[in-house]
Length: 100
Image (cartoon, rainbow, N blue to C red; front, side, top):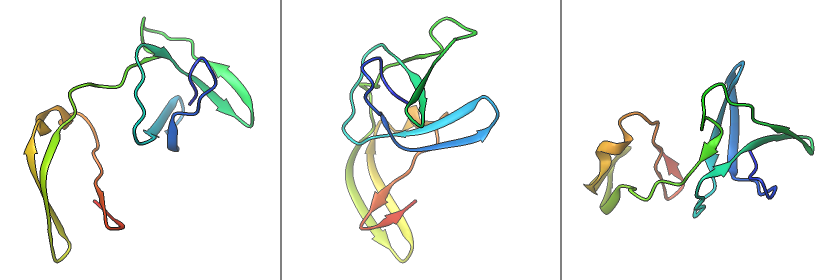
């Protein structure tokens, strides 16, 4: 996935089924009202939305705040606030090379 300036925003990309693209955005990336396109082998495919705004992307400014991380055996414990915004998303945590 690329911005209108051709900047690649994805660390990893998965295509789980026809018409669906999942992008894990790069760390520290902040975009506002950017219209995204798909680039495959240096060919850019413009997004044509079926719903207004479906191709637009903005980085959320309301990220959860982690105040403490602890690890016992194979379990992470995150303390903080704002985690409720993740209810509709698949969240990942990477800590010391372990991903959960």
